[in-house]
Image 1 (cartoon, one colour):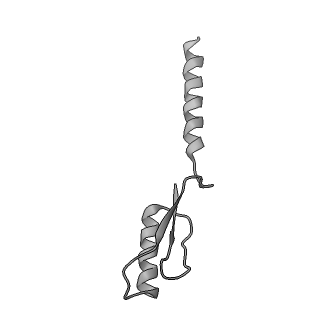
Image 2 (cartoon, rainbow, N blue to C red; image 1 turned 45 degrees about the horizontal axis):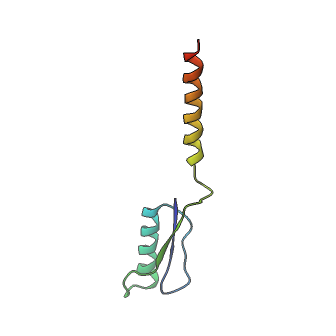
Image 3 (tube, rainbow, N blue to C red; image 1 turned 120 degrees about the vertical axis):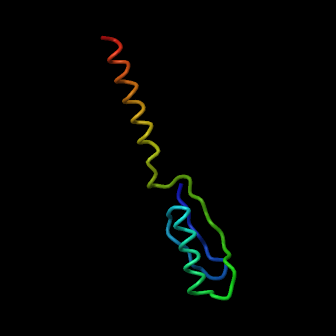
Length: 74
């Protein structure tokens, strides 16, 4: 999953990245642009990120199963 932070005070938004990096970017943005305000805004979650590699593990499992079946038939 990818996460993106949107500031509650201005139109700032981070890039899609990891959850921990979003927190760091949000804190840095507030420290620089809104120093006297408490951290606010929202974090969006993108479950259909184009950078996801979820299919890769499924492919690896399928290949492993095919190898097991092929060796058992001999």
